Length: 610
Image (cartoon, rainbow, N blue to C red; front, side):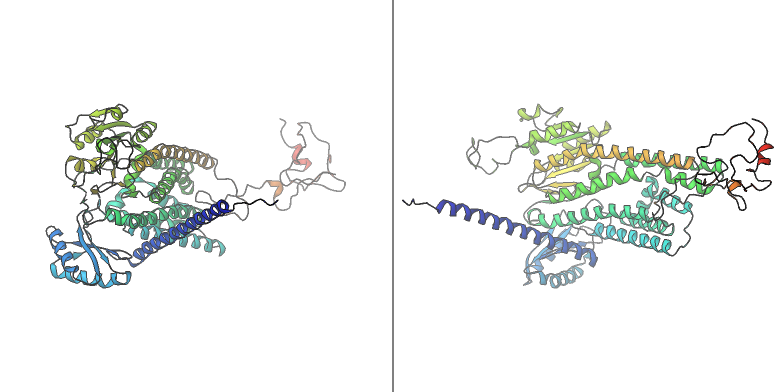
């Protein structure tokens, strides 16, 4: 008897699985296409080297006025551009100091840009950003991408030159040149001097060119390969940050959304990181070791080896690689990093100042019943990630201060300190800084961007602005968190990892300096195997001195049934005895050591007794 089998559920399950797989595949393809398009836009902006930012239909024109504020004239320019048939939207962004234009299609961006520059020149506006506004650089600026790519090319050229020189058997330059360049490159004071003179980009290019030239003519390509690997990670981070801005552009760059520039004179100076402090001490120690070596050995090459032995490369490379990886991860997570230099201060941060508005939930902001949120869930005045953020701060060893949160009794009890509600946000931050603390500030501004919170947020050593919803965007912050407190939690959890990387890097640097110092103290370094390239801290070893018996015309004695020793007068495994040997003992028949040789019986008999 046949039994009916209902295949409808099975067919439905199979159809659902196929639809889910197709949807996942389509999302993956779309994501890959969007990422490729953004990276292509970053590469085009970096290669063209223009002063304006372009990405698809969006254009940001950098305009300034020789005297006075350019805002009024720029708004007039935006109004005239709206009459152009290829322009969909045009407005002046006060925070970025850019004229934001959206065109009807990608091909129209060049025509609109030319028209906008003509109108700007007629109104008395100049192209280009304000050279004095270092803290308000454009988030999509490809300058760092160009500098890092140029440094990689210099490393590649130096490594190719080193390999070519070794292949052609050209003589390398003295180790003194390599030691001098390495000492200057790793010295924080010299780097600060170059940065003040040429800017950050110019400093990186000067140091990269000098390092590539020194190791290229010195024929030490491994040091350049290592530097190129680090530069590759930094290039990935720079491209990721620029692409993340394009992905977030339509959410944070809106005409009706308040955009705030960085207040002048509010940012504190950068603190000295442990890697910089160790590099300064290591440079001083290297100079002292080189002076002592030169005083004892009177050899400049040995003094150069002492300088290279104390090089703090590991202490700098470790945190640099970690920060590059962290920056790429944050960009992938949707966090817009405005200042990578400021973000490195997380390693030494020891205080966290949270404004109460950053801890409040945003589910009930859209109205509705007073007892329930619009989604039907019970209204909770505290953000769901607030407790996780405070727990991450405690694990990082931060002193937590909540400002203006007297009404949030359930969450303020988890803080170490609650500032009075009437105290300005900037005063709370500066009070902790006066006590020697490195402060991380977190705040969510209101839609108008007015009040003391907007002025106090950039006062922190590391400023994080929450940009979820329609809040005002503070471009003076070091990181913009569109995901709210969830993004803050990601940043705080990176603090313990940054500290561990810094400590381990310094340990490796000290261990390497100690081992290199021992090799220098023994008068050279271990001989390398044939076919291996020497690194930056190695040099060819000298051959051992020859014994009198290994000179021309003298051969070591051959023992019957034993292999001939390689050098010396005594064969391996033969015990020495102070007794007078018998003539010809141990010598094969018909063999005699030459007269006058130290191995001859006459020479042995003439030795004084022990």
